[in-house]
Length: 491
Image (cartoon, rainbow, N blue to C red; front, side, top):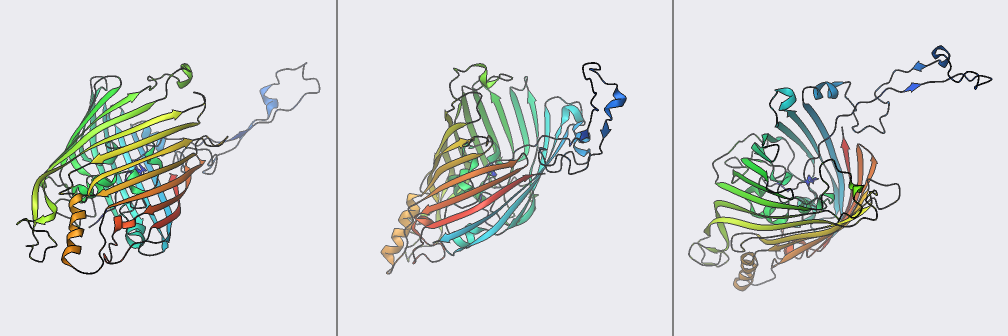
């Protein structure tokens, strides 16, 4: 089973991807209409008796205030505030999109795909009297078609929510904080793209690789414990200084484990090696808790910088040589790849606001960059990077809109490239040699109201397939041009 990855965030990180965003409970208020009778001499009776005000309360219904509430369903008939008293929050989102390939790739045409995410969290302080505890469980319903697999054939897959259709458990964990919230421990089934290798500004974009990046997507077993998968493990986070935070986690090495056809997400596997991941996060010029941003107009612009690594102790197949040292494309090869013990990567992420005309203004410009590398002998991808620029509130009166332009780049490993060259040396006729692939994306996210977003998107991929057609390596793959629209609804 093959999954395409993303966090957007959303945000998807999951996106985003590319994480998920948490919703505040919101009550829908009934409207009231009051009409005060006017007096012929208002100065003689400045305060009219209440009986003369003719106040008439009107009963509210589901549609009352629907356009301005935070969630489409409001307080769900009183259910949300009732659950809130016991520390329980319920969140439901739907991300739907239609993307079309206008040129190149495998085929022209468009597809629809969608993702429904349901999350329940329990604050144990309110529910059980246990301070600092949080329980989380979430599920995914993935539906629609995969444009990248059907029509593109690119390595930089077009959408962070593309995955095999399924209804599956996603995350299920418990987190406990200690030492006045300076340390917390999370245990259970977790999706790493919610906390590790994330970029605040990159989460705006639709392409998968701006959520869970290209290198872990292709190099980690099964794409790693990231959307739509998760893995069992333990994560510890600690505040080292007010500006420096450290995270380290130990997880199962393969989120699909011994059941590659697991569609339910309930194959809790601990039998496929171990993966360790660590990250340092350095935040600069951040407002203190409770401090107004405008309190100090001389404050420098905020930014976050991250440095991390991951290591997996499983065995990984060489991408060029067999177990006798011959090329896997040599006619005399055994066909059994040489094995390497362990795999690893080092990465860095930067998010920096570079312009803000006024601390009280929502308008700002931020940039991001993310790079990572891995050994080229055992991995399909040995380097990936993305970078871009995002403007918040680009037009007057559109405080919650965002517009962005970004590039994402994937370079295949040197052994993969050399394997393709070996094929040419041992065979006659054309054959594509894989090198690198770059995608340029432009997007605009329009906040229709608090619970509804519309996002227009365009992506152009250069050297599609990294120079090789995945359906027929003897034929070229033309560059692709994808356009589409995404909608996010918070219920």
